[in-house]
Image 1 (cartoon, rainbow, N blue to C red):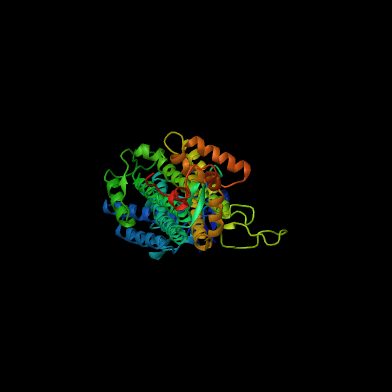
Image 2 (image 1 turned 90 degrees about the vertical axis):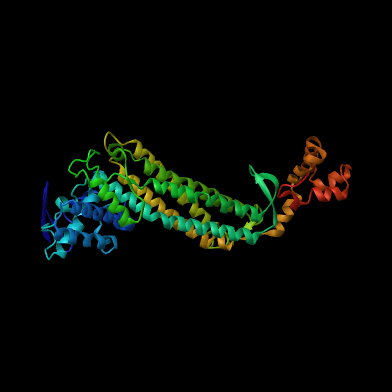
Length: 463
């Protein structure tokens, strides 16, 4: 063990640990979620990029010696590469507006920099976590900036998985093709459509989320580095903000810009709200589609049974032969969690007071968790459900021919009143629309065959 001190006193820290006393106190204080910074490596990378950019700017402005600067840059790069992920031990939800996370990064980078310079961990000389790594910064600008970078860096993986799911639905739509089925509204028979049309609609609906996610991501690229404590820029050089922003953009490869009003940018967390809301929107669509898949595959003898989902596991401990739609079910549950996380983000954003929102940790945790859940859920849905779906074509076709919904096509030909009477009689007497129209002499067989041809009702046509 090694002995370290801070404002509150002294503590023994494991000798080989790169974190220090303030991180250690946080570990003791906040055992909340069981998920630590190391569970979200893109967040650590975002923090490392932020610290590196600060070092670049401060060295350029003459506030860091060449020796300390070079060691800090090497340490930041190693942290960004994931070499010290296990040293980021702070719980994702914490009091203190993220100070524990910021100090975890400061201590790891300082100790590694000193090690590079041949010094022992815990000496904090010549590189100190506050005096050097945190120079011209506060938790209140470094923490949200690191989080924004981390979320932005995590977003391409989310978009890639969404694109893969869209492609899977589109491929399935092509496979199911022009096979006719009954469309339904309000769980009642509506008018015919094709299985291909239904699955293409799922692909199109999800595809429209991609630009929305990209827009929400771009909002995160406005940062408040240089705001320091409350946005006034105390303890930072007048030229620090443009320099640190420029360096950070170059390091991260992102199109970053400094906020126009740093005080507003420090107390306003609406960029996190926008991003979380977009995740909620995607979750709502995914959940709706999964509920559809469960309905469409219901049965097999007493449900809709338009499609069959791939059987993944026995469905009951008491009912032999039962197979449940377990993959859509788990995705539904993930979506409920994401929607709940968004509620937490909104409540936390609203609860910020005066010049700082101290609840950023729960917002950031909720967003990172939602991204992770959605990526895993979409991958599971694609690989273990969508690709294995088969259409029950004969059953679908029979359902169309038995449906009262066919009468909709008669509206332009025999009028709404006559069509309604046909539908009412067919339903009451359990007879087909086709035979009733012929029986009443409303149309010739040739004309009726053309009007009631299901394939002619799946797209617009001349009446």
